[in-house]
Amino acid sequence: MRQKKKKVLFVINTMGRAGAEIALLELLRRIDKSEYDVSLYVLTGQGELIDRIPEGVKLVNKTVDTNSVHDSLGRKHLAKKVSRALLKEANGLKLMPYFVKNGAVMLKNKQILLEKLLWRPIADAAVRPKRKYDVAVSYIEGAAAYYVADHVEADRRVAFIHVDYEKAGYTRELDRDCYLKFDKIFGVSDEVAAVFKKVYPEISDKIGVFHNLLNNEAIIEKAETGEGFSDGFKGVRILTVGRLMKQKGFEVSIRAAKMLKEHGENIRWYVLGEGDQRSKLESLIQELGLQNDFVLLGAVDNPYPYIKEADLYVHCSRFEGKSIAIQEAQILGKPIIVSDCSGNREQVNHGEDGLTCAFDSKSIAKSIKELIEDKGLRERLGKNALKRNMNNGEEVKKIFVD
Image (cartoon, rainbow, N blue to C red; front, side, top):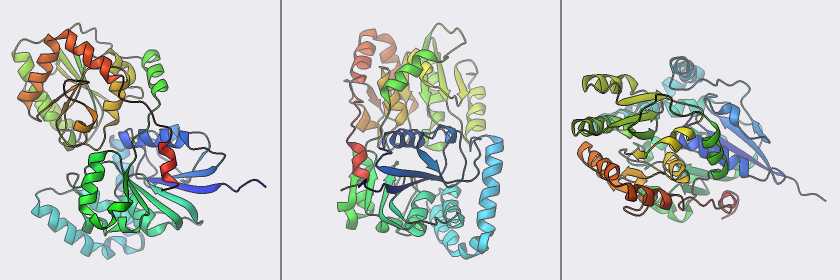
């Protein structure tokens, strides 16, 4: 008699073009559909990667919006969804003490993170599952974790943490200790898991590491078949892939580009990504006269030809969990420079397969100049980077068994 498939539900906040979402698509692709009945619920029902959900995965949402949460139309749709969530069953009024308490803490820390406050009403207003699952997986922090912890009936609950929990602005009060309800919590890197253990020491035995999975062959193929740079620039191309958000600290990179130009370097720095910091960054670019030297290309469907054609890949941010973009650059054999922060330092061995530097404009510019001037070092770092991302097919099993 054939064994009945186990029912598995994955929950994520959005399906925008970002690292966690890309890693989720590969994970969903690798799960054996003959053994597991896999469903996905996107809490906001929004994101440009929704139409890339692998065959055999059931999308729970009845309606979806493929606009980016970062473009004007996408932000409007998201704002309407948040408004409805606050009004549904007077959620906004019920959560007022929660908003006041956590808002006061954020104000004291001089960091108001409105989106993190609003994940709670989004989770509480979402449609409740009508079935029980064998396994329910919150694939990201915030609303997905609250939803799985409070509103999904399952024999086993699993959560993923993709960021430095503390630096990203999460707290136990904000999350209402929701992670105590999970049977297993995975950090996507050793550092991410270590930070989370400090916050939840009483469940440290439940916290492990699950490394992001990528399809190396597909990335290499897409790098060969898609379109890349079209501006005919003949100097040194520098590339960064990432959302235009405060965490990524692009203003520091812009000032590094200015220093390099002042020292006579023939460089052009490109950024693939979109976000709420675009207008501020554009103003700084104009102020420093870098309109032709620091180029915000926006988000693209296929970033891999750009990575392949770039001379250097630079990923300098305030903090990370485990950057998918760095992994993609390594798969394509790029010499890489990263800021010495949580997440990044675990992905690059300084002087072996990349360079690490302090997160300031002078240090970033100095590292870039070093690689520009030393072709042999660039080639050696790029060759070693190729060896970093050997996919482990055993990772998937961790979700279902301890």
